[in-house]
Image (tube, rainbow, N blue to C red; front, side):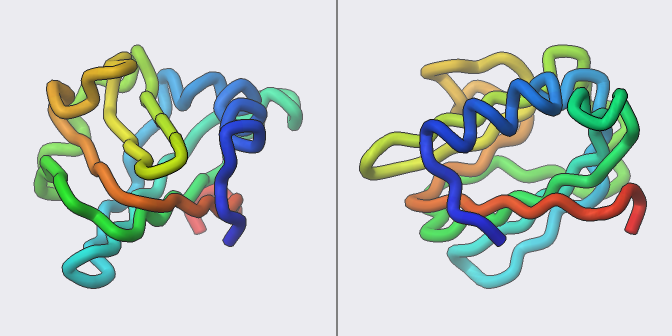
Length: 121
């Protein structure tokens, strides 16, 4: 797992086209203040091959989660919004820059890590 910075986040999101048209693979609360969300996305750097990206948000202070059976009904056409600043980070489904708490699914915490995984693995 690699801790995301503003620079590394920008490169990752561009490479996966902000997870547009991707799929939510899983959403797992790891502890009361840590949540993992995994997406299946296309990787531009690999000729649009599918990969999985795992995000772990720690220090969770606010979240709106959904059950597994709702994943397929969430619209991923706008991809994801991911924001990182000096004191917090956020991940939301859809284009919600500056207003992630309006998204149908969001997680707000203090730090975020990511990991690239094999597709469907």
